[in-house]
Image 1: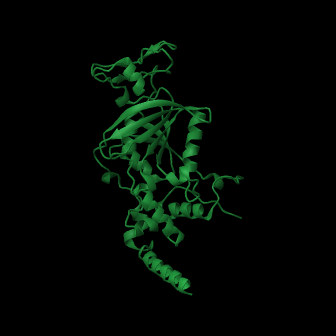
Image 2: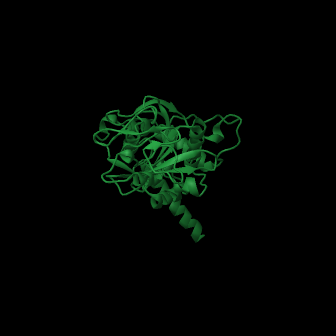
Image 3: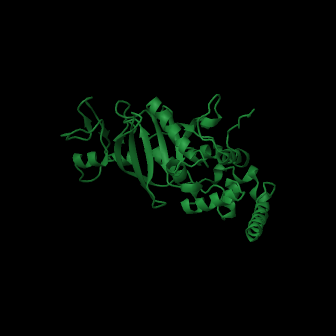
Length: 319
C-alpha cells in the first residue's frame, strides 16, 4: 500500500508539471517555439579546420573518407563522413609551412590512393593528374581533380546519438536515419554526412537519460527536455554550414524531415543553398514493409516531432 501511495504521488506531481507545459500555453506553443527565424541566426560562422582525413573501407563494400574537424566554439571533434575521393577540404589541403610531401600524406591531404613507396601527395601517378595551388598555397579547385561545386550533392546533418547508434534504442530513429543516409550515399557514390557531437538534441547523454525516465513517467520528448530546464532543441547547425563551405559544397540536397534544419544549415546569409529536401521516411512506415523500428516509444517520439516540432512527416493510417 505504501508503494502504491508513493506511485500515486509521483504521478500526481508529474501531471502537475506536465500541465505547466501544455501546448496551449503561449510560452511553449508549438506554433512559435520551434520555428526558426533566419534573422536570428548568427552573422559570423564558426571557424573550422580539418586536421586529418583517412580512407575507411566499410562493411557494405563502399569506401568513405573520414574527416576530423576542430573549431573555435567548443572542444569537441566533429566529423564529415565523405563518400567520394575528390571532395576536398580547403583547410586540409592548404599547404603548411615547411611541411613535406610525406607530412601531407599522413594528414590525408593527397590525391588518389595511398600505397607502399608513394612519395608525392599532390600528384596521382596512376591517373597522371596533380593538384594545383595559388600563391597563398590554397588548393585551386579543378573539375579534373575535385568535385564540381555547381553539382548539388546529397547531405545528411546528423547529431550524435549514442543510444540510437550503439545501444539499439527503439526510442528514436537516429540510428536508422544514419544507416539509411549511408546506404543512399553508398549507392550514389557521392555524399556527405556531417556528424555533430551534440548528443540528446544538445543536452548531453546524462540529461538525455533523465529525459528518458521522464518519458517513462508520461512526458513526451519535448516536455521532458523542458522539465529538465533545457530547450526543446538546443542544437546548433552553424558548424555544419562551416564544414560544408570548407568542403566546397555550397549546393546540397538535404536528407531531413526538419524544416528548421534547412534554414539553419543555409545560414543567415545563405552561403549554403538547399536545392532539394529529401524526406527520411521511417522504414516501418513505408508501404508493405514490416521491417524497421517497431515500438510504442518510437511511435510516440515521431508523433511528437510531427505535432510539436513541425517535422515534415505524415503518419500512415493503420487499418
